[in-house]
Image (cartoon, rainbow over all chains, first blue to last red; front, side, top):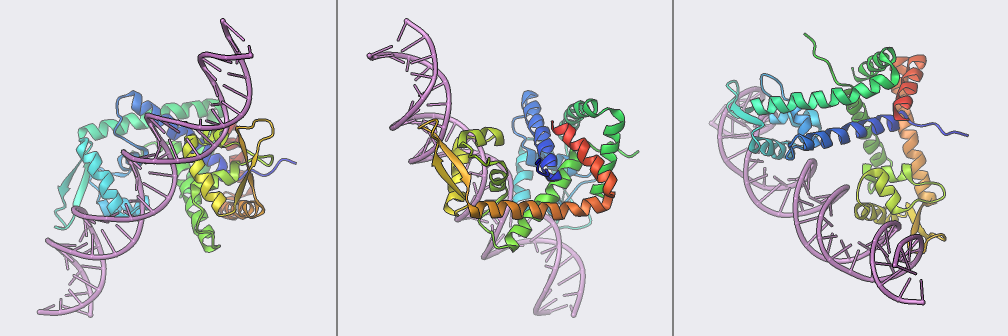
Length: 138
Length: 138
DNA sequence: TTTATTAGTCAGTTAAACTTACTATAATAG
DNA sequence: CTATTATAGTAAGTTTAACTGACTAATAAA
């Protein structure tokens, strides 16, 4: 009488493992002032610069909350703000060299962790899994 | 020059959609005193009863934090605590009838949402996806 | 030119985590 | 059989990341 396990439970379990790993590894690497919510900013800040309002909307938090997170990263030297030449009210958020380094470290940490998944499923099935997930995210 | 998207990004995106849907639907159904953190308790409280310490460890939060969440659910009438006959220090947490109802509503909400995913991938591929995820969660 | 919208800040609040310190019960070691 | 240690849970206070409401400045639209 095994009960049906919602797909979301699997997603949550795996996402949680991944996030836990990231926190642990980043702390080991000496980045103690970065939290998962900051991580989102590293990942979603565009090369050419992103607006706070735009980031907030994508992250589904208020612009005030995003302002606070950004201010923390600014203090840590991970991001900087420049004036937006096309709109004098607006700022553009950019990753600094330090920020870009952390971003790539983070991506590598996830990539390494996911290598364990690849091994568990085998190369072919892991690729299929990724295709399915990508289709669902479209 | 498309860059590799970490699998975790897909997981997070989908998990986020699901959670957002759950919050919206539960509120619509009139359950405004239940948050995602409480949802975890509904899902993980065993039929025969669970200890706070045990739940806290599984959820990777402190027992104090779990105590607070449990107290809130207790006040809402979703759970009750009974003495553990095998250990006089301990309590066993149980879902009340109201709690069980909310749990099944929640599962149905997710199931309905995931039906959209099933449709997007097709029955066969969705089943494969679930198998892959289940294997990774083992 | 007034009015509405948009980008962002400031001040204060809430929720869910945290830490440190505590009580009560149980298990174990001398 | 006591003394110590471990475990279950509570209490008080703190931190963090979210929130709301009220604001300024720049821009767009009527």
